[in-house]
Image (cartoon, rainbow, N blue to C red):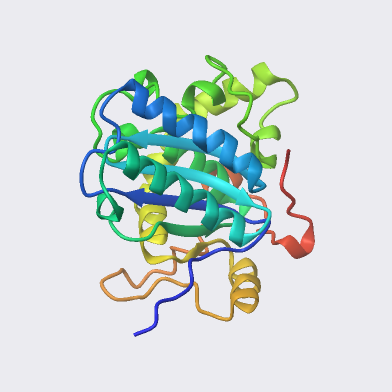
Length: 248
């Protein structure tokens, strides 16, 4: 049976997951090598990196690619280099990377918070605030990272860096990531999309395939793809057709 092409839409935000069958990052040098390659390769392939979390056996990323070939090339290069570093072949990884499309409002901030808290939410153990291999320290102002690119919803958290960092820290302290972790995880595993009805319809037209989660085993409540996060509950959903743009 033919597989779907990897889920990608140029200019749209994506939550990406790549899991491994064994340890990818054994020490600080492994983590640092991956981040260095991520920064260099993302720039070469015109992929904006908004957030990341490197766990011993998984990589979580929030990306906006200029084109889909660039995103695939980025992730394939990173996986191949990590495999060589560990002295293993493609068997290091659990198949191809997974991705989910994210409507910027309200899902992009939820995804960023979830990725920054992934060391806790995805079972790596310990306190996410003390995990050195995620973008949490950048988003809260403790350790700026020059190559990360802020998405528009993050910029809109405040008029100054301090205001944005403080507002983001409040989001992390709340239940935004925990509340939506299962939906985000399910979407990335199933290669679906999260957004309002108009966004889903637009994305499906672009890709020529359904992006809605299957109903099997799920509650009969119309929640998953049309749910609006508490941080944006009064704002109607938007799509690229009505001005939802990507920030620098």
